[in-house]
Length: 450
Image (cartoon, rainbow, N blue to C red; front, side, top):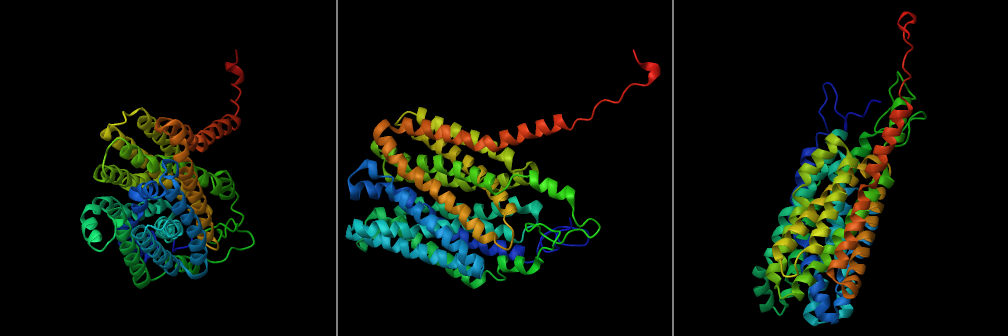
């Protein structure tokens, strides 16, 4: 099958759309500043809830709320992108996230739980937008470079995400001068970061990558499947070999499985580790450092993850994700309660495992989603991602309250190992197909028979 020149490499043609570099550059800038907002809820969300609600069992509620908001945001932003393009959809998502961040600051300053809970929900739209931006990086990328395009956008979030927790001390003093509690300082940073990202995308993301790829992709012909990236080869309109290869390839369901089951244990550990550290006498400075290392590990490995996906495929990377996440959870559960270095390493390894799963799953979802309805499909995929995060956040508090941090870590390890199931199944199917298609040995010449 011949792919359209806007998305495929070929003799005498560029390997990708000529606007791809500009699109990636704008996305990188927006991710650099919006990354600050990613860590606000993680660093102090559980601490704010424990303080304002007076219960450790409810400490996971903020994570559940802003991941629930991320779920609603992913659904709405995906549909906006589908209807209007990436630029208005992502820009509006960041603007809503900034509004929610301001609402959290006001709620904490006024000690109003009734305002805090809906504000956290709205704040989740910024988190959803930050993750959905990775699909925009893949819109105009050549198929063989899709994993690396996704990884560049994810990597750009690292600077703000890692810097955010460490800027709390810098912002905390001026915030207190304005009557804002120090614990709300990360949400001040989130409001600024999301607002700047909305302006950058609204002003500079031109041409719109999703609208460009739609314009460059001809409608499918009668002999061509709807997911095709271009017209079928005239010499072989049915292209049966390509159709068989696509039918055997892992698709949307597999990509969702990988992303969802990598998200759930990561969020659960990330939610309760700050509470676990605070319960053993560690301050917000130590907690912020541990969380910043974790956030950095979530995004810094992106170039390597993208390269591995492009070269080896998503399923082997998914298997590595499951094993890595499982090892991280076991290490966290076995770590001494007062050992900050061991817990920091555990969260760092968990971040790496999550990154492998996200990049691999994203590549599968992007390949399975046709341009005609790709943005809406990707939004629905990230709804599932948010549901998994919401589940992890909601369950983490009661599990720790009932059985302790070690019990939570053991459960996370079991869930993480399920991420590798698609790779195991694919390997078995490949072995079975190879055994079934092995040619029978040719009979020996008559003169050499025994």
